[in-house]
Image 1 (cartoon, helix red, strand yellow):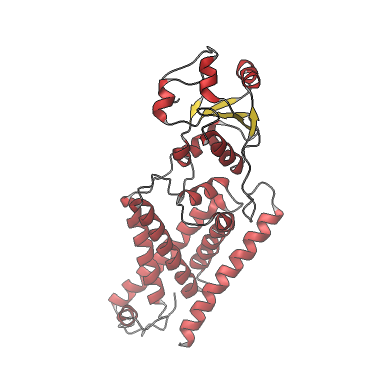
Image 2 (image 1 turned 45 degrees about the horizontal axis):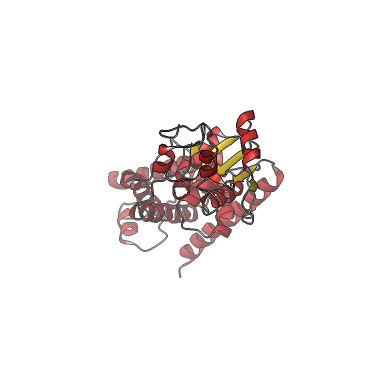
Length: 156
Length: 162
């Protein structure tokens, strides 16, 4: 290997080394950035029963997220809920970041206890920085069975 | 020095400055660690979770330092090598996302939802960046490539570094 090639690779290695040192130094010195090490996966959100969910709905102090597929959401959902189907969650992330502050209470639901989408989506939301994420364990079937107000149509 | 040689040197200089400016611009709002950039990297679904954050924190700095070196004319062959590696990586990641049918934001400059989506049209600027990086490297006479010999064909014998 010629001297010129060696010095080229040494230069590239030097650039990467300096970059790593700068990244670690700036990330440590300045608050507000993301952590350098990937945090461990979050557990699902705390479960909420029907009464707690109704209180949050009545007090308008939570954002509802419907984790079911779009066609089920359009057929009927909790009024004001945003549709984030579990399998399409990545596509919705930028809009969620724009619309929902990190400290906002979020209640995720799907089709009740047999449905895992709400638990998985709640853990995914917590992984991405939302702190107050809850799971409406009984889900949309119990909301419907209680004769509560529903909305139809596409997600806003 | 022939006119052709001067043109090739000017092209290499222009490529170097353009690459440097693009890297600095691309890294600008990601340097302090951006959750949106972590999201963008994750959307490609190429890295294991444990590497997501280190990659998203370090990559913008690699772009920034490479950009500064290219603009300042310091360690140019090494910076051009890093630049070529970065563009090759971007090309492979984007092509892989397109082939897998992922409808994701590029994560290149604008990190918002309206940012550029990955599509076939996203590939040619990165291909251009890769070609420019190789050209800058060849102009530095790092390797005995046909392109390097071509660039030395003028009277300057290619001893000038950019």
